[in-house]
Structures are given as structure tokens and as C-alpha cells.
Image 1: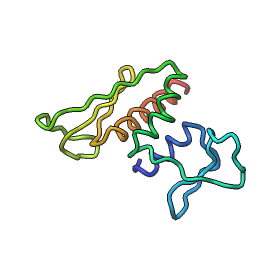
Image 2: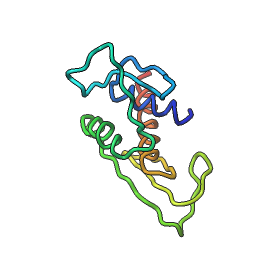
Image 3: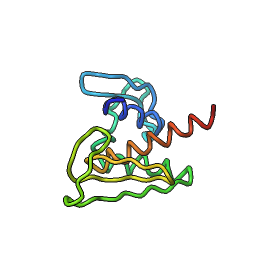
Image 4: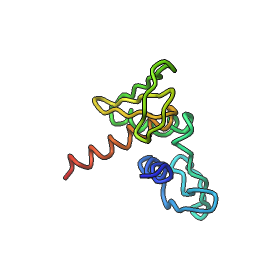
Length: 125
């Protein structure tokens, strides 16, 4: 899954509706906008780059599920490769026993949430 698809997955998980790809990125109906016009779509947050978006949308959804997320920053001395092969300072996100790493904290959060979603889909089958 590429980063754009991951961002769409996070939007769908946080209950954005009618998400479509536009020349400006994904747009849709914001579930937090109670006064929205159903004909006006707005830009989906960039979850994979924005900690603000993660803490505004993803973390509250995890709290509703009684899930706790931990975020750990590794120092420059500890060089690791993430799933995409990038080296450097890394961030690890953990929900229960599920872990993910990335070169930025927002992406690490999205990757661990993706693993959580996938694990829930596997247990539902």
C-alpha cells in the first residue's frame, strides 16, 4: 500500500464519507463538521505527515476502542531501517503487541493503526 492509499484508509477508518481522489488529493465529507453541506467536499487531513491530524482523529478513535498508543523516538546513534528501507532517526508506534516504525511520527502512527485494522479484519473472518 502506498502512502496515498494509507492516508485514504485512515480517513475511511475515522468515518470520512464519499472520499474521492481530486487533483488536490483526497476530498470527502468531514464527520466532525456537523453543519456540513452534503454537496461540498473538503480536503482529507494528511494523516501520514501531520501529528495534529493523528491526535485529532486517530487517537480519539483508539480511545473509543479502549486502545492505548505509545510513540517512541529513537536517537541518531540508533540507526534502523523501516519497512520502506529508509535509514536515520526513527519513530516506533505501538498498540498492545502491534508495532510499526517510520521516519516520521505521524507515519509510524498510521502504520500501526493499519496493522490494527488488518488484525481486526483477520479476527472477524
